[in-house]
Length: 164
Picture 1 (cartoon, one colour):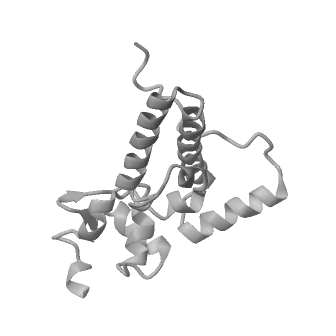
Picture 2: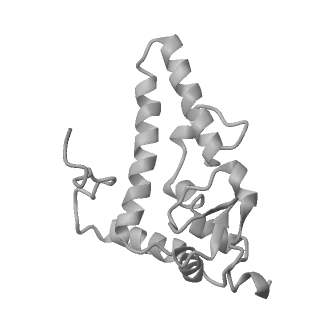
């Protein structure tokens, strides 16, 4: 079965560790989206890479199976809010890492105006001042679903709730 404490990695590191352009791009995203470290950026990139890999692989399948896989993937990405409701299969291959990072709870709390900065948004989430629906979420990297986007609010016992 395997040791439950030894989980597999959720990200893939870059093959070439010292490329100036890539390092600058990663640093820009880390600052813009308030990521803790580049590992969070790599996790988002790996998620996107997997979705695109499924999309590319589905093209090689028989027509009926390919349509089923593509429809399932589009529904999943619509549910997560990464794709719009009238998106096509080709839009999956056009996704960027920015589309994934925009759906994180940390980014949405900041864009909603609940925090003064992206870093304060992270702090509010980690200190359990934010809840989505009735659940208190303490992970800034939580992927907010489309139907949950309007349910982001301060926790009932948060001191920030009274400052609104």
